[in-house]
Length: 161
Image (cartoon, rainbow, N blue to C red; front, top):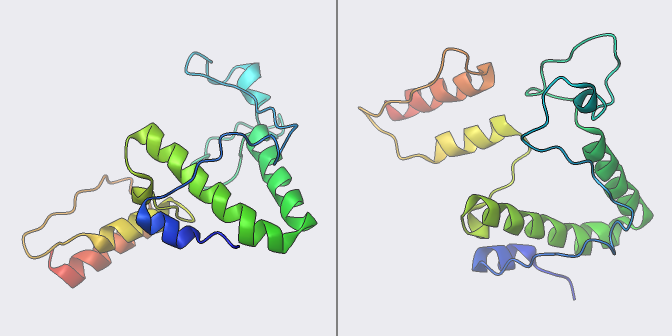
């Protein structure tokens, strides 16, 4: 029987996979904590970047840590081994489990965690979901990302904010 993640999500019945060893028995991610000084050789080794330059733009795209890239590859290999099983059975459970873990971490209900493709898409969804009207004010920094500013301008023009 196929797991209906949409029904479970809506009902707040989100399972959590606590033992991922059956998925990835060799997964041993690197650990960095708040005491690890930034810019040390240790943190540089966490990335696949070449030594010729210092990469400062982690916010826009790229430069994922090695352990994240390795995890992505393990998921991709698992998907490629049996695409239908992975997409129909495993992925929905993995996604809902990740949402449940994140919800517990940030102190909300799993059904209140909404995955998006990227931060811009998430901000767009939130801005368009607000009940704004004449007199409403949208505040942002002058360093706002252009795509987010476009959404702010669009929402303001449509709502009178």
